[in-house]
Image 1 (spheres, helix red, strand yellow):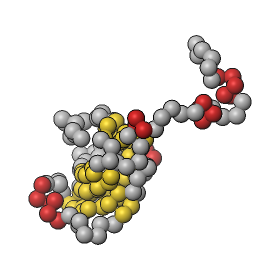
Image 2 (image 1 turned 45 degrees about the vertical axis):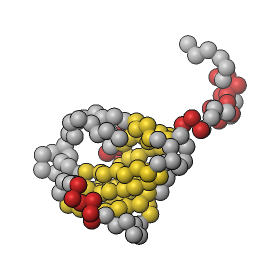
Image 3 (image 1 turned 180 degrees about the horizontal axis):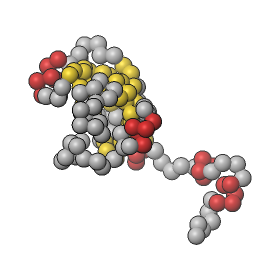
Length: 148
């Protein structure tokens, strides 16, 4: 994955296409919020996977922090907290084909853009059955008909 060139950007990549059946490390960095001297706690949740929490720390993440990772018995979660002005390191395996949301679980933060999508093994998903594309009688009215 390539991060945005400006780490303080107001819009980012959004969708990350991940190679299927590989190990992915994610570093979440918590910086200032909208106010210059405010940083908030963020519980990040990943759909479709559990992940290992390899470590967390204060300040800006550096490559030296990798040596502090817990690789023996890291906790397995689907939600992890990033503390104010801190970082959290996560690891998961892309072994569940689909498109999965990864987002802050504080609703206003999600609406402000604190969410991305991980797409993995999409070619393995296949076509979605027509029955799954509608609810009740709406399918008969909508599926296979032009939408003008």
